Length: 355
Image (tube, rainbow, N blue to C red; front, top):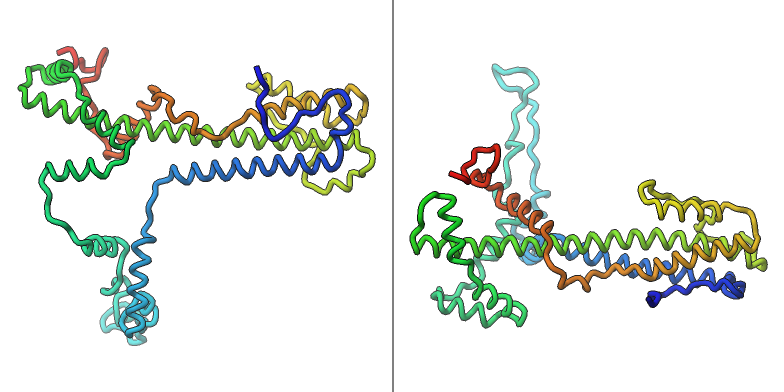
């Protein structure tokens, strides 16, 4: 199996001193930082795309323009609200009332009549859009089909041709209501079931995309951890081999003697980290110590080069049962809770499914 190609090169165990110089250390650490920076930008971009989009900035921009025009003409604007006369507390006490209660010119909780809210701005812009004449069903269908791209057209045609099994729909309906259903009711249930299945599948695709993004984040965190260990091993090796430069010349934040953390449940990783911690803390400068450090460094280089944070290669992966279960949970939340389907209860429940 071919070794994964990447930005970092392994250090040969024979004739390694030319590869362990001060300039090589600076260039390698710079390369590690550049790769991690690019991966971080990619992961941040994927996370940003997964967030719910849309703010009121577009609507508020046009509203702010109208307010600026109103200011030029001396009319009321949002900023003028702060220039109006504030209610003044009166020093004259009320008659026949508790001392200390003063009369106010205006109520403090009154909302100004000329104050605008984002929802009102949105509805105003929506109503200002000219509405065409009402189209009949055939014209609406034609308008929809002509404005779809190739991928949307293929999905629409597949969804339009797909239908649930008539026999299964009638069987499920009869099992639930314990009576036969008419043909028009069967058609209605078949259409509703098709729409419901489509919504669950769409949510499952969203869940799958979230899983991909979370995997990208986990891989980036692992790559960043390996990059930190690579810098420590490389600095330790360079200090052992290159005697032309003092330690003070390595003016960076890398501590070559700092121990790496590990989890007890990961036995293989724990063993490697413990051996590496002993090597970087050792004061020995023998051949065995150098070769052991080079072995650990080369292994980390291969892991660093093999980690790919991109998730585009998984775009055609299938939907898993876990995606469907999470989509069902999200559907319940988005529909503000669905009534519990008691007819599904079996065993020691009410047994309605077997009536």
